[in-house]
Image 1 (cartoon, rainbow, N blue to C red):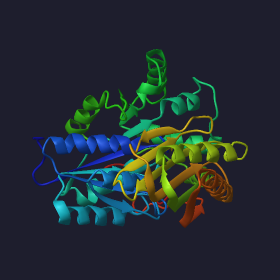
Image 2: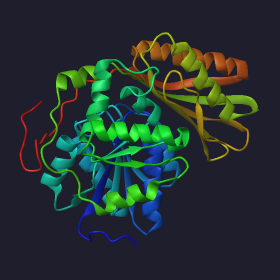
Image 3: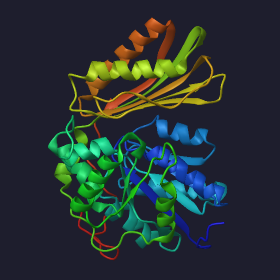
Amino acid sequence: MIDQDANRARYIMVGGFLGAGKTTAVDQLARYLTDRGARVGLITNDQSHGLVDTSILRGRGFAVEEITGGCFCCRFHSLHEAAEKLTAASRPEFFVAEPVGSCTDLVATVCYPLRRIYGDRFTIAPLSVLVDPQRAARILGIAEGRSFSPKVVYVYRKQLEEANRIVINKCDTIDEPARRRLESALREAFPRAAIHSCSAKRGDGLEPWFEDLLASDGPDGAAMSVDYDTYAEGEALLGWLNATVEVAGDGPFDANELLLRLAARIRELLAAETGDIAHLKMTLDADDAGQLSVVSLVGGDAEPDLRESLLDRVAGGSLIVNLRAEADPETLRAATENALEEIGAAAGLRLKVEHIEHFRPSRPVPTHRFASATTEAPPP
């Protein structure tokens, strides 16, 4: 049993840029807590509807509320309402929240307002920011490869600047010398943060980070300064696409292979059109299996990763596509629809788009912003 404040739930926020592996880490943290007898509620967040992350976490059997239409900072009242719904349903002792992957300034706009307004109900854990090691190494200048334009990089670095804990995730994808170089570069660039290393996918190295979140106090002191014009421009450079597709065939088909081929084809179609793919994530929920196939792709020069696989061939299912890239949203839509048509025809499948949205995020306008744990800041 975890020793937890009987009167106040603990709020744990796991942030990080698109593709850092937040959902897998949140899943592992929720399992860690429930295995020790704690009640857990999860809160996911997206700029729009149809979020792969919510589908994955609900498929695990967790209580999940999804906040759409903006990040936590701009939907602060919705964040509180989500916590109220979870409390009414199961009275969680821990709320684990996963913010939008392009969001920053979370200490001033989420952690401090929660502490100031609802401090009698919540304790605040340290803010964790996960990084994909290949992407982080490129942005920090210790590795070569495709990256983002300067204003998108501004948002990425601001996420790390405000972190209490920087978590190098996906350590199973790099060797030990590369991990040490990255850790050294992160310590030099962001000396205030403690650093953990893990592989959320494999489950390696998670317990020290989790225990740190349970035992340590959350953010304190002055919030970082943020140029909201640069922040808004950087976030708006990212095109956003969410789609839901019904998949059917005349006979059983390999859902895992379908997702891998779709991801590879979308990557090929976007190769000459984008600054970089921030994250492409797809799930197929099989009609007759009750399980998910999950594919993830981080970066325009990466290979699709089958995160979870269906063991048997399936007759049909519901496909969710979440694509974020530094590109015009119309380009993302064209690439996605063309890939669905091409791969579906080649596999002899009927892929019917039920819902699709494509847009750029609007300017972040926080509900609250506190310059410190005790002082309100002027509007950005």
